[in-house]
Length: 260
Image (cartoon, rainbow, N blue to C red; front, side):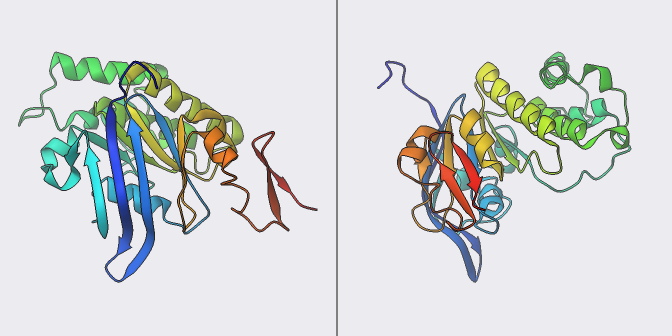
């Protein structure tokens, strides 16, 4: 046990998620700490995005508890939640006619006064976000002029400018090539360490998550194993993720092998 007490930013206990008449995932238990990068992985349709949307209070939980910084999620007002938790979902942005700077500036809405005037602190947070996501040279470009990878960095920068202690991202590397997937993951890792924010994201890129995350939640429909990547490997959590005659997991390399 470390002599430094870990700050629990998010605590989830016995959580069930889904819709009124349809439970998608249950028995979800994990804790996320300050400054950690946490990956939520699993096969298609297992409930990754549903879990993330539930954590963000975009949709209600079915049962169980979600605490943010020791306070039940349902006790947060909309205003308080907006200054505690920021979200990047897979929906496309409403207007790509905005500039990069204008879109990132929207992240400051929870803090600006009624006329939307930016304070020195607002401007500082926006500048920090531009710098961390390496967007300085693109700040005056229109969003429709950007590549998918660049636009994804802008969306993350907007969440970062919101200056919340917790950031949730749904499939932040969808539609990106290998280089840009790695670039986004390494940026998220850097942001978590430098800013001490808690970052959770869903992903299909299980091998990359194993290499770069502090902890992982593997949604598998049964015990939903949570822990460090090494712990999940030791528990053989990935061994039965896919049919053995198609894909097998190599614990030594932390990678999946196609069975020929």
